[in-house]
Image 1 (spheres, rainbow, N blue to C red):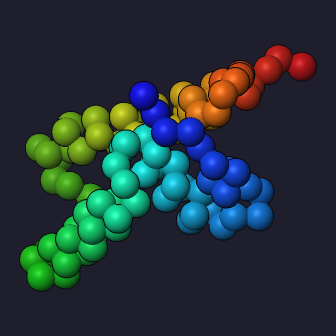
Image 2 (image 1 turned 90 degrees about the vertical axis):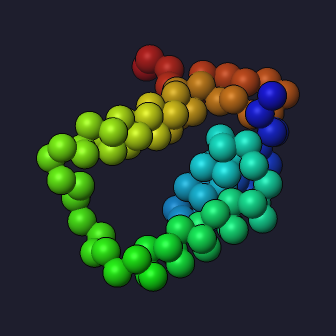
Length: 95
């Protein structure tokens, strides 16, 4: 069961960074502190690895692309129909 989204998750005055972070946290179904720790570890790993951030080699793009597409799919589905709240409703309606 997904957590109920609070108003600050989708509030129009919230920064885009906050909305994206909050929605990712909600969809990964982990507490905020856990997500913060994961991000911190990822940053530290990137910093200490000495590897530059760049596109994966052609041989490794398949897995990377699959992960990117999965995130886009989740974002699209959340934008199409809400999953939070007492009354989930379609967000995209034909005019």
